[in-house]
View (cartoon, rainbow, N blue to C red):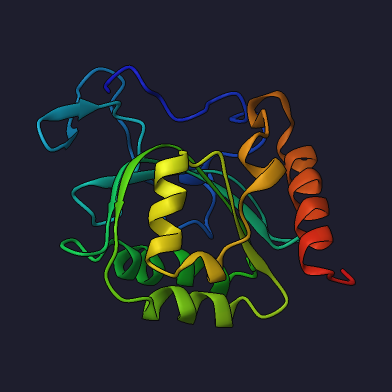
Length: 191
């Protein structure tokens, strides 16, 4: 797992640790010391710890004028034991929403498992984005099935073309336009 780096080709457009409005502002990273782990597996030091011991993330891009953020995840999403959604919602999502982010693209190709608890934080997040949305792309099929079994799929826009986007081939603004187009078709939004 230590070879899996967060996507870095957009660093010329955005770096969360240099964004004064980011929850990860002024975060420092080691290029050589592997200081993070999921269970007994070291992970690349560029991933951001946000309070979970099993799930890490990287904010790849945020555009406050357009109100969206693209976030990549790695690890095991564990609400049952770690309450990952609560920590994510309180420590990452809420500060972003306070700065105008209301559309979220969650990239989950490196999320290995999902363990559910209740859905109250998902419901809260969904209600608070108001005119926005939460879209997931490239989550593994078994993780999506776990979302559905836990009945939290109602809070996300996912599936279909969203699970097949070759997102690394896009610039961040183009990826957002593509995802927003798919979301608007799905929910019939006038935006």
